[in-house]
Length: 505
Image (tube, rainbow, N blue to C red; front, side, top):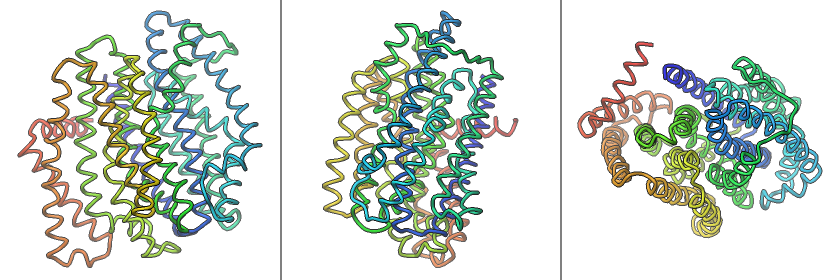
């Protein structure tokens, strides 16, 4: 367990660094290109390829990891042989996808919705670049599962870090030469370096590649039966974000950029939670699927950690959206009006901050138990609902309504998937989660009081955005901690114990 604790710390730090560099990248994009048809075209292509990457990673991970660990306990040699066979089949599949999708790019881009000619040109060219390197993009996603199987979590964060870092460096050094295409070239170069690091660590931890296509029939049958539903189950939030941007591309110039920047800010806390804490929780759930008491305790801990961290962040983001977005984006070609438009979208995305972070907990738990039928039913309805709500809310509220649609659908999703997993738990476990929500909501609401008082009754709102954040963020954090102590002592003690453990290390 000490190895997992150490990994959790390192992975969390790397995830924070990744998001910091991601901010820097978006700042340079905003400064160099603003909110325009060019940024819309790039973001449509980039969102599409990151959606594919997420589909591969979440789908493969949700099925491969629990099945591999289960086989590893009973027949280690067969488990490793299955792992090699699946990897080799995946490589062949990715090569085939590269050839087909590269040739069909102009038709695939039609999925991006109505676009201006400039947006369509940029989206087509960048999507074709990404398809040319599908093997690199896909393998970095697949190998995450292999590394998690040997409890190696840090290299996966390094891969994501390099993709973002090198893309940022390419903007700085090559934007004048390649324009907005420099971001795509840098992203691919960073993933390529990261792939080499993943291979090194796999070898270090004992994995040995073999050229074999020998896969146990039962393993293959289970994998393929679960893989397609897993693509849908584990990535529905990302699918809906892409659908939002496809709808937005037919509205006003820059709308895709506003949705992207707002969703990026909204997704940071949930992404850190998913990539660090959740990766470890899922490994534990996969190992404990035959130990019911430990399994339900780990499941509850996932909800508890997620709600304790994400709910107050959501409240803070709601209150401080304008200074945060202004500080991050408003410079160069990104105007004050662009900031105001992004803030409006962010308000509608905020509920999704919590649901998008938590949703993978019950999904991963269902896969660890091998329960998928209910997931398939619920997941399939969410995409349909999102398309329907997108159409309705776009007509009623304009492009900000697209963000509201995703928030509503994700709330529906997390509610019903949580209900499904707790149908498998002892009676009363689901009630504990409902009580947990209210226990966290009270101190989270309390933290809003001093922030609102300072905003409306002092000159704080007239100060520079960075100064506002320096003043108001600590006030919110301190108030939240006091609220936890007064209204949810168990959560306060757990947070205090966590800080103490970090200090000892």
